[in-house]
Length: 204
Image 1: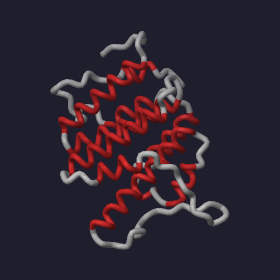
Image 2: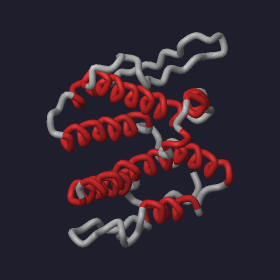
Image 3: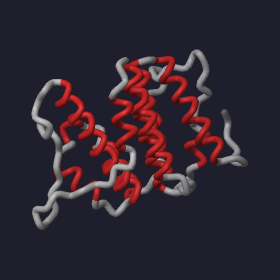
Image 4: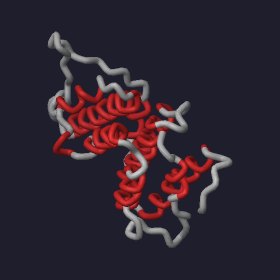
């Protein structure tokens, strides 16, 4: 990991006056990427492609689940399972065919790729919530927890950076949906990173 302490030094104090309009998620990511080499930036590129709806096809996910980087493999395996769970839930609610729009990956032998989905029951429970915001918050909490679980032993490496950026995407989405919840989530992200690096000098 290259100069990760500068990421921490660049985190703002998230108070009642903080708004993403002052510094956008793209601003934070750009500052992070300035500290990374070409190889690490290529991993960030791949991660960010996963937030571009136009790129989320079967080819992308096949590359993701076989990627050389562990975080990308595990994160996008979970992401695909989560997206398929949402589609299946919607299909049932709309009385559509159960497999309509569900993304199924095939391997070289044209056999279905089965991805482990330990959070399946938790996702199903979150999807059953009546209130839309409560449902989305519960799902994003599961995403957040999965990111933390993947990187529980990662500190000064690229996977920690990728996790930070992935959580930043969750935070930014909540600023658009509910600014107060977004602010709380960003404070949580800031506290997590700062708490991980006790003893590092930074200006808050």
